Length: 223
Image (cartoon, rainbow, N blue to C red; front, side):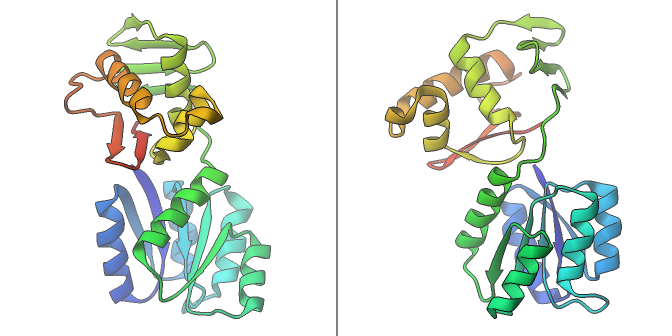
């Protein structure tokens, strides 16, 4: 799951966004002020931040600038202000994208995915997910202390998912990264190798804990 910092002072919008985002496996933490946003960012190290420009204690641009001085967290500004000057100021302060209200939830989710792909949170070299330990630099996997053999294709698929833990990677992107640009529509390749990875890595492949999918869209690796 991806931890999302929501910086917004409209309670009704916060409720709407929380319901929609948590249904898509985001863990939402809310800050109604710029000061609270900075404190939460330092404590949580979120995977992405959504920031409104109109806050009671400071401007959203100031919040973006403050977050950017201490973190590489991807930032999406969500604001009713549609003037070019406001957009330029937010982007110059360090925001990765700018979206105006009102908005469609599908577009918001697509933009969040795009921003996280462009500025991914760095994945550690060694990933410890309970019984499953993955050493990316040594290309070594153990499960409950027992070495797990992965084929080169299985490892390449896992590595693409591990670049952005918790972030959905679309099927076409996975296919092109692992098999090459000519394989963007060969979804069967993906299903076969995901099933093989799950049999090797998951305690119960029928109820996967780590390699999760959004049907018809893509896959993500959950720590």
